[in-house]
Image (cartoon, rainbow, N blue to C red; front, side, top):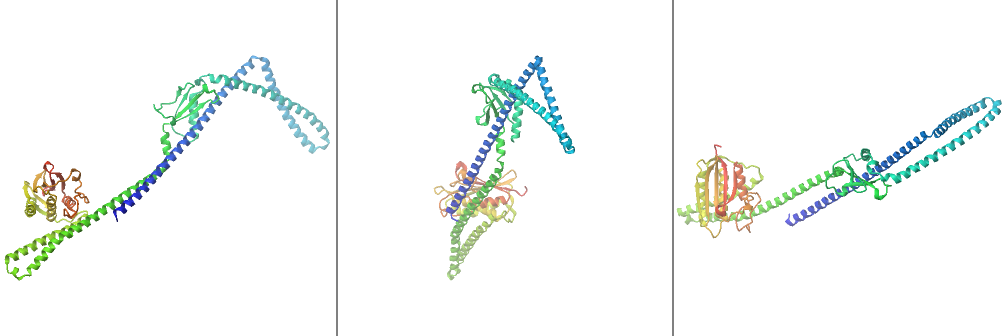
Length: 519
């Protein structure tokens, strides 16, 4: 897949995720705003009902006071008392008479059906009783009308007193704050708001008269719901009721919790997409690495193959076979090139190690000092070819380790080979290999004075797919494995490796730590 195609797919997916996230956030914002508006409407409705209840309580209070006043007047006037008692007695007598008349009518109807001869006398009795009923009903209606007018006038007087005197009293005398708290709690619970609240009563001057609890020092006006108490009062004397809900935001958020799972699934999808992109780019990098490996390997294989081919053709010449020295030299060249070719084939086999979690190692006891010395003796010719020097400093008193000789040899060879590849052209190469003991472990270092590695690359050079930019891949020949293979082999031997800048920030120093046999 082309890199442009990958980036196009990535852009489309990122845009899609961004739009989904924007829609989710917008939807939640709208839901939260609607829940907030519904919350405020419910609170306003409850406060209006509480205000009406307070107005009713005040009206009942004035009515009771007026009735008590009227009752005291009645007790002070015996005439009025007797008149009232007579009215009550007459009302009771008339109720009894009305019941008797109804009973007589029922008996008359029943007797009329059983005795036709007594119908005449019964009709006369009914006419007389009817006149009495009409008279009693008229008296009762007049009495009801008189009492209605009296009480209506009393109500008018109470209303006038309320209009002229109620708003002149301080709010503390007009409202029972404990009863107000009960009203608020009852209305909120009835409307489904069973959450804590704090309320304030503000007088006409805007000063708090009563507060049911503590509020935050800085509260936004939008967080409080306000309504007027006794709306019939003149504007200059109105009092206000303010309610604050400390857990309002938590309550509103609890109403939109059903959206949370969608965010969780969206996040999981985003993580999966990111991981997929990572794998795609990783595989693409691996593919590029393999292509570079094939190109470089093809270039490297040409030399030993052509050399062996030329040597084999020369051995067919009878003159060469007659000269033992020449024949020995050609045989040596074939042997060296065969080893080189075998080493290149081994590099190809190393590619499979990256697909396995652990390599198959053939461990045996090895003396690290002898191993380093042997590799140095073999590699010194290559270093001298470029005008450099290779020194060793074997200070390890205990150097016996369990290791796979082939892989440890490849590790040290790769480190030395990198020193040659990344040398400075204008400075002779100086390569140093050391061994020493520290805390019961063996340490091996390979240090050079080459171009070095920048600090930002020191921790990344061992990553499997990381390569320090060096321009064209053919300028510095390699196989794309390098230090990733080195770290894998060292870790498979239960060791560690780290990279440091050389002395004076010149060159690079690789330090390998391996366990000794006794540990």
